Image 1 (cartoon, rainbow, N blue to C red):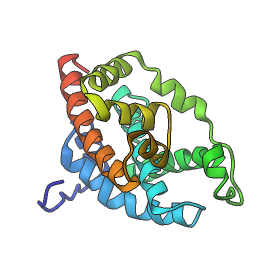
Image 2: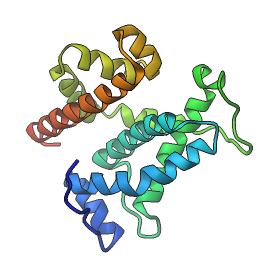
Image 3: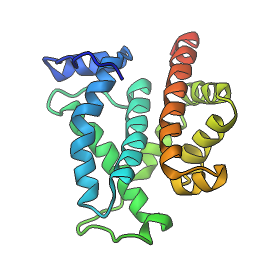
Image 4: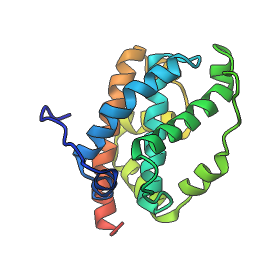
Length: 195
């Protein structure tokens, strides 16, 4: 991440437009404004800081894919960061329903099952999926395995650490580095394919 001060987008429309242009500063702003409150929310809803970061990454990916495919359109009455928060919450509720998290905690009161059909339909968008797959194929060795195990097979960082013979904290750091490489490859592939 850059050490430059984050830009201030005077309107949510400006932030939305910057995200559509794939402006790295807009991504940084989403992280700085959305991750801390989401982390607090997950911790108060049966999770850990690491759980929050994982759910945030997945929610952000879903949000950006919807933005790229046009499934998410800017609406003046709703803040972009609020929409992202909802995507991330949906991911966390899905995680809470899964067997590996259910062993550690209970569902919060008032939980309603998220409609995952919308997310699944969005992920099946052919052009974007082709670009993601092409980007994933550019990753090599452990990076490619790690990204597939985490995002496709939905293995936990602990399970991946066991497979790789690494510490969980090392896997988390490596996952971040690999995700950055994947984003770079995806941007280039999307540009080449005119997405």
